[in-house]
Length: 137
Image (cartoon, rainbow, N blue to C red; front, side):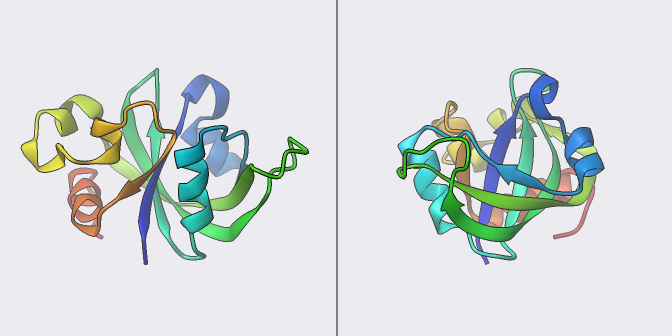
């Protein structure tokens, strides 16, 4: 299993809306590195859900339910989507400031590549964030 992080502005697509919808097609990604990460996702991979711009916190975990296919929002075959389903909400959202203050996370994509909308997460990073969020990995 691999671990990932996706970003969404809560005013555009919040965790709460994601839970209400019960699934999402993760579309609109127009960055090559993020696109490559989408292409690597496999069914069952766990994905941290990060509220960007407003909140700046990891609020929950999603599961990949469908692997990469052509993004239906464009005819350009360079772009793909995956499908995600909400899995667990963090009782204690994990703030970006908390991660930045901890040297353990200094190599994490979220910290090093702050503009990347779909990033890789190591198993160790994932387990620690899940614990910080009040869940067990």
